[in-house]
Image 1 (tube, rainbow, N blue to C red):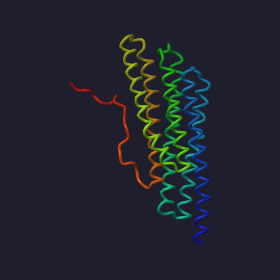
Image 2 (image 1 turned 90 degrees about the vertical axis):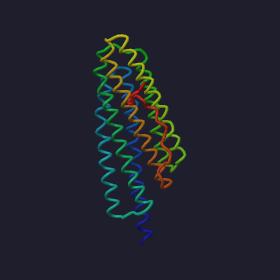
Image 3 (image 1 turned 180 degrees about the horizontal axis):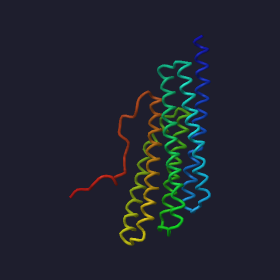
Length: 234
């Protein structure tokens, strides 16, 4: 009987894992296409990103339902319960990252009516590609149970923060040099901040993978490079 319950649980978890991987693929695609739509001022592509967010939301709901059913039927404990709780947290983070991608896509139609800010589009796309790569590696680490790869992702969040800080300083410079840049730079800063938050959520996912594999959350605080919310005193 115990073996039967264990094998049934394994099948349930495998099915939920497949849903997480599918959801992650949709979110990766949303990140890349949102940044592309912005860079190319492609309103049609931006609209596709916005519409595709429903599929991401539907998958989160399905994962939550499957996880709840598995807990009710299999009553997992210890590492098995940890695996189910990790799934729920990963799904929640993926849904939020998808929302940020959708929010970026919403800015495309607004920015399409404004003159470009020199260099910003390419910088934002590089930042988005970095986060998408982090997310891909986090999902790979989850499937493979690779805490080392998850820790690598965790450390790379610092690079995303540095990109964000550099963009933040550039936008301030552009706004001070020419007041006509203010509105566009405000929208672009909103985009950069959303990408930076995607990086934070991806890093949280990587920490959940480490917890799943090792049973412990990372002890050391991860490097944090976003200093824009801090005031600098004399």
